[in-house]
Length: 366
Image 1: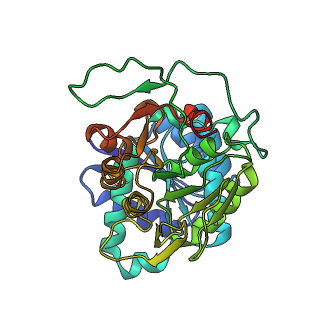
Image 2: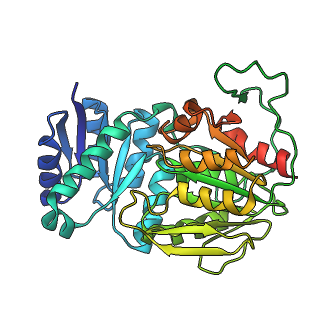
């Protein structure tokens, strides 16, 4: 059955071009277009598309307001188009908080210069987010708040579940993880990750005793703005990683977009050029693999929502060295791809709902 798409943009050229690209895929059907946010809301309610593509700068009503209204009235996966600028990054992050699932750069030059690559990328995104978890789309008040979440530790939840390897006997232990003096917490994520990371990191206190490294699939123009946003919302410090940075407790370093981040045994960050042979820049597997080599069994790795299987092989190396790996549960994921790869490979020591992960990090590391 074809994925039904609503295309929203105030540019007639862009609406037509996106519609043409999508209609060329036999498994995608463009069922309508809209020129502003108000029309988008009306069309979303009337046509009930599987996916909406949305511009953010439009007359009558902007894309972010439209996304917020759509999520309240008829939650639908939204793919935002954004400019590759610092301001474009800021607006896109606002849209993701409002409930958008993912984004693509809005680059007219790429459309005219490399139409086949643009077509492939756009259609892949549409098919992927059409399968997203609609229960996770509505914006969370705690995630949108302009101040850090308090208190740092919420009451214990009964929703957390431990995962054991296939064929192993049932564990006779509490779902609460055991305390251990980890030298590093490493978190990898992709689609749905910006909001997921925010919900995890805002639960950590300023005196969180372990350094953190964050690997989020994101373009180069976006990671600095994302790090700045997290730093304002969190009690821990967050910054975009730079070559030569040194890990320290209470500091989270975000891998820069378009590059690769590795950590040596001294806790020093190495930023390397993005290898064109790799699909992901930054790549979770590369960072996980480097910390497995440098920190052996002293790493707590967490794999959050995201498409694909990036992180699985790095998690395998971490497990071989004796480190722990957690995965986000399916119900709270926007896209249950990366965590599912961890679980299916029997690499997950525990599987937790998103809103329990920050609390369990505090319980484990403090």
